Image (cartoon, rainbow, N blue to C red; front, side, top):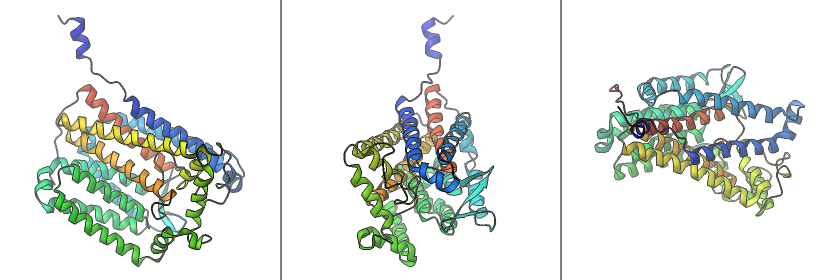
Length: 388
């Protein structure tokens, strides 16, 4: 008969990662408050309802948490098994959004489809699928990736198809994010540094060509170098964002008291929410948000390292991929807002207004919690893989 002490030791440890939970809910709550502040006037203008955007964002968060609860019930073995069909489904979605009458055009780009009355940005779904698929590919073909350049090129050929479809929307930012996710995961999966550098150089050259041959992308890069040279036209968005940070100083002007959001700063509740935060909460608020994202990314890599230590490579790579995704996208959004990078339409994860983006990113965080749950519970069952 087992002693009480032995019984207690046999019970799986399923405690929640406190720091990860704090960072996730901290970003959600702070993001919601900033969306409320940045969108009250816009709701009056667009829908004659001051609560229009806050109510919809609250609904987005609740749906995101509901989706996350569902993701938590799915074992990582299931994700590994269905990674390839999911990637094919993602490519189909990228094709569907380009079909006339199906995709929704906003500001000249066709990136959304309507589902149950909600706009879903297809690229956000594909980012999550890309993480799952790439983790499965490296798990199955790890030796090939580490020893041969073909092992690197083969999955990137599939990703290049997805990126080509994204460029047709056009959505250059999401294409870059997906490639960064894939390459970062391959590097952490053991790809040779020399091959990685060559491949990165080729992709960088292609990106430069894409910018050069596209007049609106080139205009963004040129205006980024000196936004004040054409502050009323190409540099308008960036100059207004910089004014926001300048007005915020150290402590900010106070939540709800910002003026740049009042039809001066375009997309204040979405892509440039960080600028509104800088104005109203100041340098302290900016440091706080950076700290929350740093904590989230740090915990993602710690969870990945622990999974790798226990020889759960698929789970480790998923955790690394999610950390790369959130880290790179938040860095680009903040960099654009602060004038460190050319203007690019990428949302701030877990904070910016948007239904599809919020739901998918809540689901991505649930994957991290699922990995941690399985690590604590000692789930190490092997998964039958499909060789492709």
